[in-house]
Image (cartoon, rainbow, N blue to C red; front, side, top):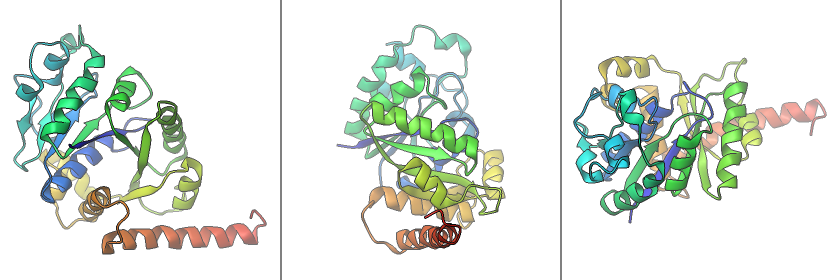
Amino acid sequence: MGKVYAILSGKGGVGKTTTTINLGVSLNDLGKEVIIVDTNMTTPNVGLHLGSPIVPITLNHVLRNEAKVEEAIYEHETGTKIIPSSLSIGELKNMDQNKMFEVTKKLRKISDHTLLDSAAGLGDESKSSIEAADEIIIVTNPEITAITDALKTIKLVEQMNKKVVGVVVTRYTGKKWEMDLPTIKDMLEVPIIGIIPEDDSVKESHRMKNAVVMTHPKSKASRAYKILAKRILNPEGKSKDKNRQDKQIKEVTGVFSRLAKMLGLR
């Protein structure tokens, strides 16, 4: 039986769809059967990111009981499977969002990992994805507004009795105007499971309509997404990649703790 993850963000533009796609392709590259579902019905982007904006059957048709979920699955050139949503505003009518639970129930039987690219914010679409998922991954930028919205999202997830696996911090540079990693971890009170550095290769991959792990496999962002995929598969493991990332967070945390003691804050 497969597992379903909802990929959430408190605000738009933080790299949620990019993270969903690259995590999915990385998991597929590790030999797992992966299905990416665009549950952002009002502003779907998965198909656009992967060069398939228009397809005959979408998730909209499934939620309107006009097609079976198996008919809406398409295989990308990477081998990763996707279920796009329609770009047409007209196809937003008469959809049963409660049917998402039934959809993911079927997908668990045919996929090792199903990733729901949810809508940003705390609306009904996000809640539907949370309810349909087993576990939640939060995506944020190291900025106070994004972190604040991520915290709101985490609180909503907890109220709905779902587990947050951790937070993925995207577009990280470590510069002084960003929130540092230990502060983010302290605020959100969940593990940081991924640190994706700012990388122009990501923007180039968008232009090429493919995952950065495919277009620029040796880039900093690609390496970070591959580490994230390994952590998802082996969350308690002590792989070299996990140790490297843990060391990065620990080093930053150590500096922050020493400074806080000097200032009398701890």
